[in-house]
Length: 321
Image (spheres, rainbow, N blue to C red):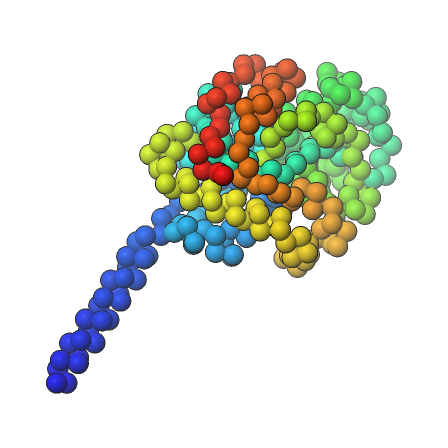
């Protein structure tokens, strides 16, 4: 009888080990790209997807790969080294216009305004002031969103031909450069500099909010088209996890502000300012052809892209409600 019980025990144990192995094998590993590191719209989204179990719920084990600029991320995708990620729309459209085979699989429905920042005590208030003081504008890398908006905002200020665009990689390098006097201004969204904006150490003299059309897509989950064709189920699960993470942030604003202060070094005032870029309300809402066309036309008409890609091939609503 004892031998029978031992045999039964071993069978149960082996069955359990087999089940555990199957579960482990069932967790698909993949890399997920992010255009930027140091902004809560990227960093907090990554934290929530991982630590609230949204990747795991979808049977995914994800390496979140942040880049120092979206142009580098899309070059990596074009080289076949990465296949799915999250990006600002300017970089996505510029990549698509250069025939990088990308497609939007979800709109995360949150505004992302790029501003031209100067030091709080800078005499610069106008485009002429910027030109007279030296006209050097820091960006991450040429070909990305900060480059696009440096063109748009300097043009709006009437000094497009008078400024010098300088690539400085991350936003910390831009802050160091403006403090040292190596540049007079830099392009950045609000999130990474919210603490300094709240104290008045930095001041925006122009913002993309004043330029964008009403129907505009800002922040998206994208996939390589070939990867989508090969791994449709994987793309569906990734999209679901990211949308859930975005909606968690949107539906828990008090938690979000406390999290920014506790783990991301934001002051209460900086966290409050950052919330304007963490709305995510309606993340996963289907994209309309009108909004996609309006977005593409904005960059084409403003000469950020030389050729407008076909709107129909830029997005799919297959994975959203």
